[in-house]
Length: 331
Ligand SMILES: [Zn+2]
Image (cartoon, rainbow, N blue to C red):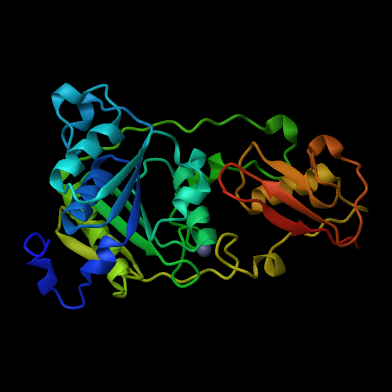
């Protein structure tokens, strides 16, 4: 062991025992995920949990490590695990061929760090909310052509992904229904899988930075707390300062004091109130309302139901991993 890790042991504040005892979950074994996985396996991270439901396509081969032409059609997690075991046989690897939302929460909460290189905002938002509530550091990375970015979320210390408007407006629009336009206007919106321009020279840079932040967290070294943007064309890194948002519905404890809409039975139908909630929090179309006091699921169909002052209900939405809790104030 000493020989294998001799050069990294020379790094100041490096703690190989902590590295060995750590678990890192990697969500998405694409261009960024494979680079992170390779780097962490080489560094000797004790356990890697690999999560991806996809199979290998020929168009992945220009940038995703581990995958060869013979592997086309095989599950990414299986091929990646085999390669990683060859890189470092002393580490444990667990593979899950499933969508992240369907992975048991108990397993995810064993992670010291979760790293994501996902290609859809819907799943990224889910993971952000999950990791904040579970208090697990999240390292998020993205790339587009010669551009790349990275953000580290230390729950309740650094801004989460919902604290700023870095999620494109059109993605937020997909997840919400305009308030006040009536239910007839609701359209089913399916998130399309877009093909973004990408090349391995960028994923090696951004994936390398993501792996480095993971190793810093494990070693107890302070991480970056800004949004780091890399323009590979000019070769410039830009660090964008971020602030936690007081009204963030994911990581703020006080959001309900500031922006929760108040339901008044006198001048508002309950279904309209729900639409207002949906709009305020960018909730999805498959929203369900769980009425806590009676432990029953209610929907817009329950318009006209009588509510009492101070009653609590919960909103369940696919873009968040746990219900949002609301209290009703009647005026
Ligand atoms: Zn936040």
